[in-house]
Length: 405
Image (cartoon, rainbow, N blue to C red; front, side):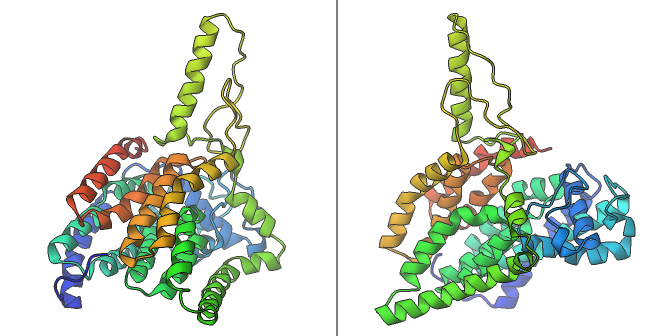
C-alpha cells in the first residue's frame, strides 16, 4: 500500500464512497429481473438444504444435482439467509417441491441478498483505500465498486463474489497496515467461506512466518503459536460440527470434486487451453498421415463429476500435475516474500498468486480472473506500469466473463 499523502476525515471518505456504491446499487436493482444462470437455482437449493435438513445431512443430500460443495462457513451463511427466505416464501426453502423454483419471490430475495452482502465489499474497499490520496482512492473505487466483471458474475450470472472479495480486501488492508494477526484471522475465515482462495495461502504463510513471527526463538515461537491457534480455532468452528457428526470425509469429497475435468465448461484462457489445442492438433495431423489414433471418449470439460481423461497423444494432466505447476509458478514470489516481507508488497504478491492459480490450476472457472483483477485494482494506481498490467489482464479476461451471459 502507498504511504498516506493526506489526512482525510473518515466520515468524509465514507460519504464519498457511498456515492459510488449507491450508483452501483441502483444499477444492480435495475438488473434484478434480468438473465440469470443455473447458479440461482444452485444457491436456492442450498437454502433449502440448510433449512430443511439437519447439519449432519448437508453434504450428503442428493435431492438435486446441485449438491452443496462450498466450505462450511458458506453453508452457515445459506442457513442464516434461509430463515429470512422462509418468512418471505416458504416454497423457496422447500427441499423437494421447490426444485427449479423460479417465482419472483425467490429471484428478488436472492438478488437482494447479493446486493446487501456487497456491503462487505464496500467496507473492504474503504479500509484498503483510506490511506491514499483522493484521486487514487476514486480510481480504485471506480475499478472495484463499478467492476464490470463483478456486475456480470454476481448480479447477472448470480453469485456472492463481492461478499467474498470484501473479506479478502479486509484481510489485505490489515496486513498492509502491519496488523498481521487480524489479517491472518480474516484470511482463515475467507478460506472457510470459499476454499478456492487458498491459492494465496502459501504467500500468506511465508509472509506471516517472516514478518509476524520474526524476533528471537522464544518470541518467534510464541507468535507462531498465537497465529496457529487462531487459524486452528477458525477451522474448528467451521469444520468441528461435521467432524462431530462423522461427515468430514463427505465435506472434503464435495469440496474437491476432481472428476469434473481439467477445464470448466466455459474455458478460462489459461495454459491448459493451449495444451489441449496442441493435443488436438497433433492428433489431427497424425490421422491425416494415416495413423490410427482412437478418438477420446471423454470431454475436456464438465460441470458435474465424471470421467476426465480425454487426451489422445499428450500425457494425461492430473490434479497433482496442476498443483505442482501452480507451486512452481508461485515459487519466485515465495522466495521474494521470504527474503523481503514488506507490507506494501503483500497485495501485489497475492494478486500474483491468484494469477498463477488461474494460469495453471485444475478446472479453473473463467470468473477466477476476478481473483487477481480485484487486488490488482489496488496496485494499479501505484505506477503507470502497474496500470498497464491491470489494463491488459482485466481486458484480456473480459471475453470469457461475457460468455457467461
